[in-house]
Amino acid sequence: MNVKNKIAALAFVALSATAASSAAQAQLALQNGTFMSISGNQTAGSGITFMNLGNASSDSAFTVLGSMPMSLTYGSVTANITFAGGSRLVDGGLYAPGPNNYIMASASGGGVTLDFSQTQSYFATRWMAQDPGNNFSFYNGDQLVASVTGATAQPLSLAATGSSSGYADFNFTEAGYDRVVVTSSFGAVEFGEIAFSGEVQAAPIPLNAASLGRLMSFLMMLAMRGKGGTQVMVRMAFASIMPRRRGMA
Image: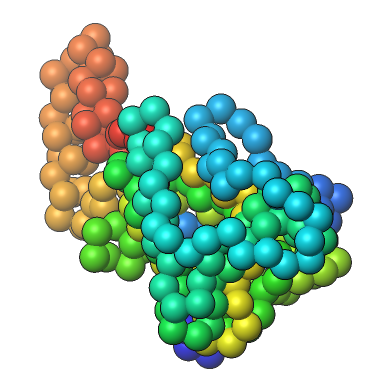
């Protein structure tokens, strides 16, 4: 991110945190129409699937449950989770915000990848400790859709929750994702209580000057043919260029 974009992002964070202070939520615009918000409460709503990582098996401070690949199925959607290096699934004991198990993406030797069998437009997780080197990257195939670091997320958490921990919600309004890669160059990424799914709003079809001129000429021609049929044809013309919604898993 260049200096100009950093200044704009910081200004957006400041405004969002102020506007959302009563709701304890702060929001930031990422790449490709992706928005991240952080709050102190887990999001709930229709079309959202909560991933089951299991409940804590003990009250221990730190117990490794496994680092083998996991495959979880929810209706028509399969989520495959792979661990690299020192990454693993951890017992949600004393250090976790609740009784749920959570994932630790280690800074040594790799991270964690979540592959979804269908394109998704929503992702949420409890991001428990936002170290500067933490990174969440979202891909659609080989295309990087959006990414965010702990250094960017931490000011939002501080504004929303008063700590460097909170529920991070990612909404994708243009391109969805089918793969999430969680890595860190410094400090492990600890995250759990994962949710996904939703519906994508298709991106608007851009109109350049030439196409806009042709549209105006077409509408003027319709107007000259009489008032009766003009309203119907104008509505049809505008409907043809408005963005359409497409259902996502």
